[in-house]
Length: 440
Ligand SMILES: CC(C)(COP(=O)(O)OP(=O)(O)OC[C@H]1O[C@@H](n2cnc3c(N)ncnc32)[C@H](O)[C@@H]1OP(=O)(O)O)[C@@H](O)C(=O)NCCC(=O)NCCS
Image (cartoon, rainbow, N blue to C red; front, side, top):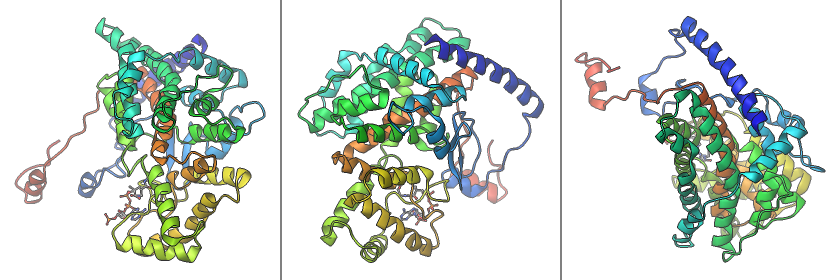
């Protein structure tokens, strides 16, 4: 796969040269102001990092290298007989900025197949955990243990030239992405199928092989995995998992370390864990109401009580997006095509009708619309994957594509260690009283 690496190198060299000139000429221009409230409120709206692989428009949703999700669905290569994009394609696009050909994607599939061996101690470490340990903890353990194979860590210890860092991060990223489906499937089979693992099928593409190792061999589930792995891959740089990867990687922690950290962030219920929360909530609502598909009116009453009890509606709202998430829409379109009469899917759609006006009426929620997590669980349940604690792992395997492509870029462009300034409340109070400055 030297071709992809060489293509990246040529693009990165050109970009680095351009960036040097750009910063020389415009480096002192202001790109924003930070208000006091923003420092206390999660730095919303503070533009302070560069992350190459995707950009979020708060109304239109995510664009990967300028392409929207519907555009990607049309342009990226598909499996033979399939209609969903192959995840290999989105990685190639994020890394190079170019839409790959069928041959490029086939080459990448073959490369990842070749790179997938995993050190046995990673499986042993997972086996040392109680089987009912949350799948995210088990998978993070496996990834962390693969760190012993880090090319970056070994080369750094030998005294690598900083101009070559990106190359070792590239090698680690490719190896890790290749291995992740097997580690994740191992955890799934261990936790839910008595440890009966399924060997990889060398004929399959990365997404289909993941489906196969999990134990789902229908064409429908393979297509779902390809779509799922594509649309969850990246969401610009400021979200918790991407930002964590960016931050930890900036300390030159190798990709196994930085990705484990990113996965820990993804395991938070306000971030990636929301997808398990959504289906858990739907199951609870179905049980409480005693119906398989609750009506819009029943959902309205149920949700109003939840809000009165101080709970959040999982799968709704977003820190940046202000419209229905196109990743939700892509999954809704998939459901319309493959399973329009599925009860969990119909419940998701009834929630979509009932919830936004209620959230809007509260007057404080900036985005009453569904996000990516509002739909994914219902699709998985349809194919029989009801073990919702595993859902965030699927999200994580996909997220590796985006954050690792971004990290290869960060090292190639020589981005330094990230270190924003913080202040104390006392410093703020003294500044407001005219007794001190805000420390810079
Ligand atoms: C995603 C999320 C964390 C964004 O948070 P945020 O940027 O602080 O959102 P907002 O600025 O709109 O929040 C304003 C208020 O509305 C509340 N709110 C936001 N989304 C809500 C939801 N889905 N249900 C109930 N209340 C919600 C917030 O808790 C906050 O309340 P507060 O002022 O009493 O603290 C938030 O919308 C949420 O918790 N959603 C549910 C979890 C989820 O789906 N996460 C996955 C995101 S991809």
